[in-house]
Image (cartoon, rainbow, N blue to C red; front, side):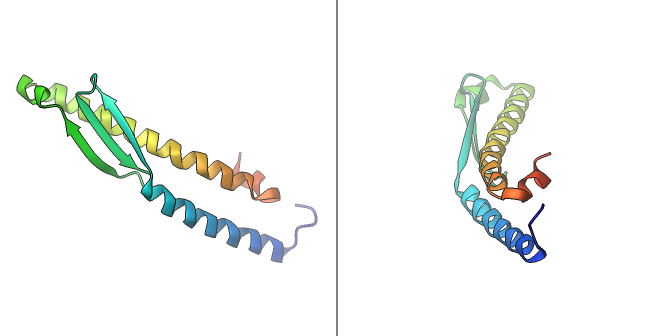
Length: 108
């Protein structure tokens, strides 16, 4: 951090905080969808790691197989959240890379 004074560090931290807030706001608007069981269950999650919707094919309900439905829901939710997390992670990489000398502190 040669040549980086305390004022510069505070400015960079403030800039990072503003960018993080912007990314979080944008992430709330983005969604990721996961489809499991050949499309029997579809789950949509947003960048805030919240499940937005779950769609279950009526044929699955006719099967009357509670354990299979639970497995499909679990898989679908996990996959959708994983995809939503990846969306936000990509944006965060950009933020961390743009911090110049500070980026090394966060990318270990």
